[in-house]
Amino acid sequence: MARAPALHEIEEFPEADRLDGFAHPRATPRLYGHEPAERTLQSAFESGRMHHGWLIAGPEGIGKATLAYRFARHALAEPGERQSDSLDVGMETRAARQILALSHPGLLVIRRAYDIKAKRFPASIPVDEVRRLKTFLGRTGEDGAWRVVIVDRADELNVSAANALLKSLEEPPPRTIFLLISSAPGRLLVTLRSRVRMLDLAALEEEPLRRAVSQAFAASNEEVASAAPQPSEWERLAALSGGSVRRVLSLHAAKGLALHERIIKILDGLPQIDWGAVHTLGDELSGQAAEQRYQLFFELLMDAIARLVSVEARGQGTQAEIVRASRLIGPQRLATWAGLWERVAAEKADAEALNLDRKALILNVFSKLDAASRG
Image (tube, rainbow, N blue to C red; front, side, top):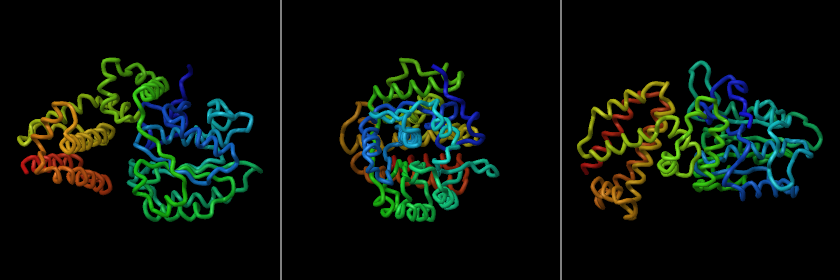
């Protein structure tokens, strides 16, 4: 099978929703595990009663963007290129090639664009990005042609950008479809949610997860593809993935299994914290070159905290998890640890928005864990 074109052949700058070494979701031909959602979109489109706005929601990395681009290919393809019973459109068609290159006149993607001068992505989608809608929607298209607007991700819109998008959703032009992608739909303006139909995607079961991961490695560059996970690693990767393809790819590419073991080892040492190990982690994850591992570290740490709280609250988990949760939390500190998750998430968001020192953030987070474990 021929490999998908490498991203550097398509676009010059990095993309916030693409993992290094792997193809972007718009280059992904197949979607696994979300057949009901595909049928919903395909049936609505074929019926002629297509709603103008859809909110594709669900956990991060499960295929939401892949579904949005699959639908865009279907809607923007020539009628004879569409399947009558699915969203499949050949990746060699003109519409698919233009969408891959982000050059199709009927497609607009609103997202966090890479800041060349700052050499980083902004913390949110600014209003100027949404204002491109005015020009896009003002163009006169061919008779009967559709237009598709993908907002990836809608929960990253700042307030001004969200309000600007709302105006277009309130008075949508004919034959225009908005696809809003969100991993946190609760953060969206209520007025935005009221203008769209919800399409809720669930985390992937193990078999579709395995197929989607295999597809991602098959379409990756030679170096990444040659280092695909071994069967002996799969069970642990799947257990930590939460049903997310992106999480499996991140875990494997960034040596996440070893990173997870280091996090658990530090937690197991509480309330006596191994500050040498914490400083080493901070040094490793503080540079810009460690961006992927830094993000993965916090995902794994946040999941570990959430898991501890869940096991203590429900009394369900492996024997090792039950012992760890009972020792660190116990009934008397359950509320403290539950609130700790939100505080860590907020401090990470603030650090990224203000471009604060990453090592200082990591040290501060473990100080909070140390204090929480002591009560």
